[in-house]
Image 1 (cartoon, protein in one colour):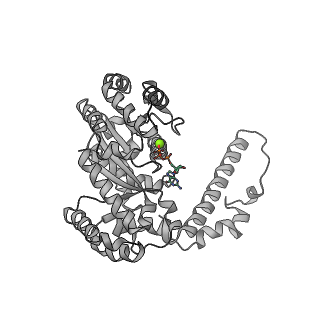
Image 2 (spheres, protein in one colour):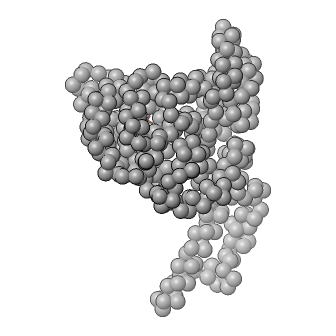
Image 3 (cartoon, helix red, strand yellow):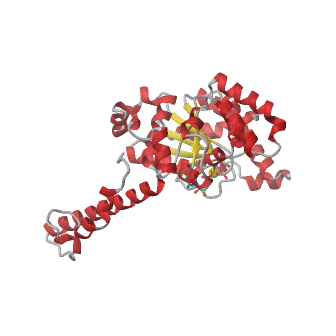
Length: 359
Ligand SMILES: Nc1nc2c(ncn2[C@@H]2O[C@H](COP(=O)(O)OP(=O)(O)OP(=O)(O)O)[C@@H](O)[C@H]2O)c(=O)[nH]1
Ligand SMILES: [Mg+2]
C-alpha cells in the first residue's frame, strides 16, 4: 500500500521545486521516497528523477509529429501516457513500497476539465497507491482580491475533477511581502471563510469590477457556504513550513495512521506523535515569519546559522587534535568555554537580542 503525492498547479507555481524540496526533506527524516516526472516538457528536473515520462514520450516529438504547439502538445502527451499505463505501472513496481511524489505539467485544463490525469490517478489508485493531491497556487494571488477569488475557483474545480484527498497550498510565502500589505491577516485567506468581506476590496481596487459585483458575490457565497476550500502555506526552503505541510499531508492521506514504522521514518513517527508541527508553522506564525517580521527573522536565522557553523568547525578541530593531528588554530579557539569571543560581542549577541520568538 504505497503512499504518494500528486503535485499539480498552474505554470510556475513551484511544483518541481516543491518535489525537489520534499524529496530532500523526506530523505532527511529517513523516509524512502522517489520522484516521478509526469511532465513531458521538464527538460531539467531539480530532483533526482527516479522515473521520467520523457522515456515514453517527449514534448518535442509530439509537437513535431502532430503539428501541435506546446499547450496542445502537453495535453496530447498526457493522453499518450493514459494509453500506455502499462508502461507506468510496470516501471513503478521496482519502487515497491517507497513513497512516490508525482511531478506534473502546469496546464490548468489537465486538472480542471480534461480526463487524462483523472484516469491516470484512478488507475494508480487501483494499483493500491494512496494518493493526496497537492495543489500549489502562487501566494502572490492574495495581493489582488479578484485573483484570489479566481484561485478559489481553480482549487474548487480541481477538487471536483480529481476525487482524492486534496490540499491546496499557497506557495512562495517568502515572497508574499513583496506584493504589498494585504487588507486581511493571512488566516482570512487560508480559512476562506467570511468571503463576502472581500467584495468591497474588489470594487475599490479593480477597474470595471462593478459589472461583475453580483457574480463575485455569488462565487464568494458558494465557496463560503460549502466550506470546501482552504489553504496550507509553503516556503519551500523553510524547515518549519515543510514540517507543518508534511504533517497535514500525512493526515490527509492516512500515512499518519499507519505504515509510518514500515517505511522506516522513525524520527518522523516520533514527531507526528508528539505533534511538533503544532508548535511551529501555524498560520499566524507564518504571517509573522514571512510578512510582519521577515527581516528580523532572516537576521536571526543568519546569525544562528553562523554560530552553529562555528560550533561545528570548533568541534571538528577539537576531534582532529584529540587524534593527534596538527590543526591550524582559529581565533575563536582561544575561548575556553566554547563560546565565540568575536561573536559574544557581535554576531552572537544579535541572536539573543533579536526580538522574535524562537520557534
Ligand atoms: N522564493 C521562492 N521561489 C520559489 C519557491 N518555489 C518555487 N520557486 C521559484 O519559482 C520558479 C518556478 O518554479 P518551478 O518549480 O519550476 O515551477 P513549476 O510549477 O514546476 O513550473 P512548470 O513546470 O513550468 O509548470 C523557480 O524560479 C523557483 O525557484 C519558493 O517557495 N520560494
Ligand atoms: Mg515543473
